[in-house]
Length: 330
Ligand code: G3H
Ligand code: 13P
Ligand code: ZN
Image 1 (cartoon, protein in one colour):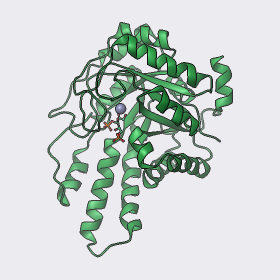
Image 2 (tube, protein in one colour):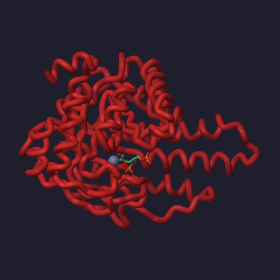
Image 3 (cartoon, protein in one colour):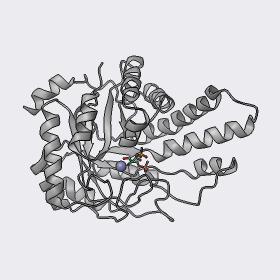
Image 4 (cartoon, helix red, strand yellow):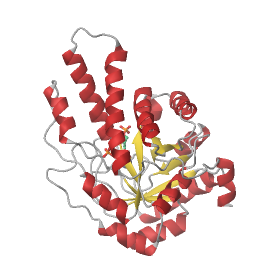
């Protein structure tokens, strides 16, 4: 099956009442680890590439790595999604490359740092929707801003989503999914203690637009075991906390359908490489330590697929093509 439009994957998750992980990818080992987990747990999966990933992979590599994942896993619905697109131009580039879904993060200006106002956000998001839907491509928008600036995406100031504005935003733009700001942030250093997230916002938005697929960014759990592996093998990460899995499960119950995870994959890979090289100081074959990193990604993602409730849903529906999706939008 070809790459699947994200709208179908999320609409099915709404019907089945589960969450789908969107995992950031930049290289072959990450994709292989994620796909091994998806294949073993029979999970639909969203592979997402940031602008940084497009640059790192020089675009063509990400396209063909995703094509390899599809060829290797013909019975798993796979979405290729642009994470935090900052302009219509970037979204167009991703669509031209074969992405079946794009995020336009109109909550921030093109610099991915300065917050916009509601009107500016609506304008750029609607522009992307008008372009993408004609081609059957899904669009995710964002309203409200996350904290954190570690990965270069974010203003550092949290602005929680206003539920009335969220409902208005969806109507005015026609987006297929909406990222909410409920108190999470990107990166490893999210919280110093167990967080209280603004979960009510999810319910309030669901009351206004029932069954609409909602997205949670900054969803890595930053497991203490992963930090320990890094620090036990020469790393120097500070004490930190992520989003506990119980909070993510709670968010899914309330209507979150797409859960963005990047940091946990990074931590798993870094720990595995550090451990391998430390235990095998004579090693110099990259396949040995990158192989260990790939296995670590598989382990962490497999657990999430089970916890998010994605496991077992790969065969629930016949995936649609972008052509078929075009007629849905008409
Ligand atoms: O939200 C951003 C993601 O964590 C991607 O980070 O831009 O460093 O690839 P990146
Ligand atoms: P984490 O940094 O928590 O993994 O979040 C990633 C993300 O939201 C990508 O868009
Ligand atoms: Zn994000």
